[in-house]
Length: 340
Length: 131
Image (cartoon, rainbow over the protein chains, first blue to last red):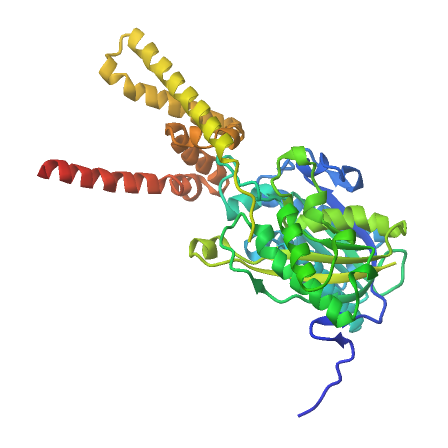
């Protein structure tokens, strides 16, 4: 049997990148509720309706992703021809937003599904492809749409019911980012930690934050162990969409394992909306981490207000079928460490 | 694991007020039909139809779900809730076509109400026939 030396793998779950992987440009497209939130000034394009003159919510979501891709490419001064791989995913069955977006881009495409962890899953795969010398430029994109997600996962959009206070609001929007093997102004991907699927046994499909927090805590814990780092190494540890309830739980689990992350910890789902916008425990969905990180924190990193950020997007991997069959909700989180 | 509890007392009060309000409106409509000359015993059916119609129109205009978020069981338990579950599905799946969309999905939420309503009625009928 031939033996291989795996040089870049660190510890159990992490990869240290020694080649340059730069986030050269990012773009965000936001829906109406997101455009009224506290981060509205940081999105490249905002819509005040959910249908975007398209014939369905699914088309509208795809439209947003296409727009985010073209904006990100334009900012990087690239055309689709310069892209070696397009890696994208979303929440809908058969990742249709991503596939249909790829249909128009016409570049080699890898469709991925990681529920709301898609952004960091895409960044991780893209970073490893660049590290391996398989590409020069990679486009990573993700999207979610409140109405298309509601009708697939829950009820029709006009159905009247009371959501529990810990429920979260699926974000309408899309984000895209260009990864390049050439050094640029943007932040660099320094290391990644691929998450394990963690199932806390939660069966309530509204309790997403509670179901995902143990997965986030597991990945963050393993990142610290693998990389031999303390939480204070980072200016900011940012989870994707745990919301208020899940954020607290994540802090508690990590504190129990000896890591206090509270002073430099935040969650995209908590930051995206004002409390009066009636979103329950906060935002969720693929676009949640995409809008908050690629819109707001990417800019903060460019201005060097933040130098080291650990982005941990989290996803619940259930489907409407599994919860009707009384299965619990497995969850996942992938972490990427960014530096500038 | 700790989860925030729903505001039970607030929900109950709102459900009582909205539910009572809908029933008062229903009674007003029934009285109107009686004044228009419909015999009191038969005025129930057109009243229910009118309330269903109002709920369906409100669903179509997109205001029903906003009210229901506050009213909760107060609007879900009366016939308004049933009307909303049918209309919202009909509207939602219009884009998948009239036959395989609206037509077949319309009763996906309300279907179980009909099924178990009929089953219950059958057994109640059976019991009353035996007694």
